[in-house]
Length: 550
Image 1 (spheres, rainbow, N blue to C red):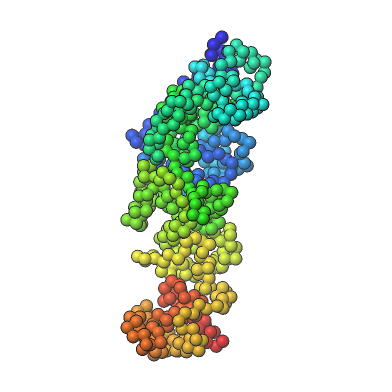
Image 2 (image 1 turned 90 degrees about the vertical axis):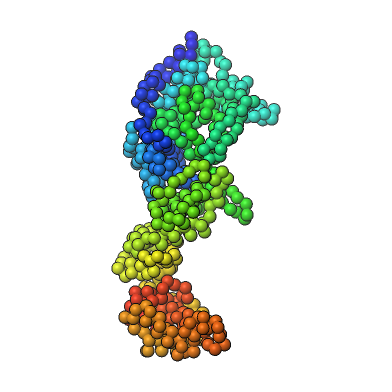
């Protein structure tokens, strides 16, 4: 008896690996083209870290004219949730991330290197496991849970490294005839990798982000095929990345300690390993100390949070690129109107330590992104958001479409557009005073320096009776505000007031603030002239008269 007999007994129907090597040939891509993959498990919502990784994967493939693959790692079927694949596909699509190849819906995929769900690749893994058994590099292990627990307890008592290795690998040296007899007898087993490593030897590895790192060799005889015939993650990823011809694996730095094992697996299988790049974990600042962003504690860890808040997807993508590469922010400053597809992401410029997730910074990025949108786009995006999260506001927008677009167009489409909207959930609060049904509910005015009611009424009466004309251009309108200011004892120019504060009650800005507050209930708004043009003559007069008459 030899290893071939054992391999044939365990996997009698598995094809020779040459079949798969021929079926999935080396890709014909230009030199330097990267093949990347995002390979989540269908176990719940997409985490911000997953989105971060997929953006990097997609960007590197895109800019190098390579291929970005979406692969589903669903071999742990106990953890899989209903519609988990759809959640992933649609979650990525919401952020403009569409794979070149791989899974595109719950039951569809595209590309010539599939299947792209690991649960459908069982026969492929078994072929490569069979090949390892034939070479004496894998073996059946008959350990019961009780035996494994006994090994662990002994290691713990002796205060030595836990695991299934060396003398603790109980079935590693089981004679072939005994192994075959046990299998024929119906004993339960799994397949383990027979490591050739030694913990007292070191391996050196160059990570594309972290640079040169050194580890002890792997000596653990890990499980590669489970009792259900499906592979473990470690084995499946090696086979898949090889056959899909992945060139670069970008993953979180929680996987960096697996490098010795993964490199050994690639070597044992006869594969050229991909280049590994381990991204720093996204952190959260909590009372001055950093911790990993948490699905359990932090709402912003789920990408659904950004939809609920109404933060545009391209703002989130732009912010994550900001975290990814230190060169992104200066690039954006120098290229404010370029599409992010023109930015070149470089792995060696990625942070080695954890990047702190900064909501203030994200909202600042979002303001800049939204400032470049047309009023029509802001209307549509806000309406889409409101239809899900604020039905009353959606109705207001739908009933006043053309007017709402005019409102949203105030101070837009200029060299320095307004930047007061960071998310769609901000819009209602920022524009509601422009709608009579909302304005009539507002009765608190944020008057500033001029807060005497009789003085305010006097200024407003003179303005409406002597100075207001909706057809005035902006310069004429503002000159009339200066004339009104002068009439009421206020300086025409701020600098005049500053030069002689004792000589005036205030300045033209104080007078215009009275009009602004009266028409909007606020002292800080976009351009007052544009607001009045959109409100129209009748509304301006009615609002002012109503205040004067009360």
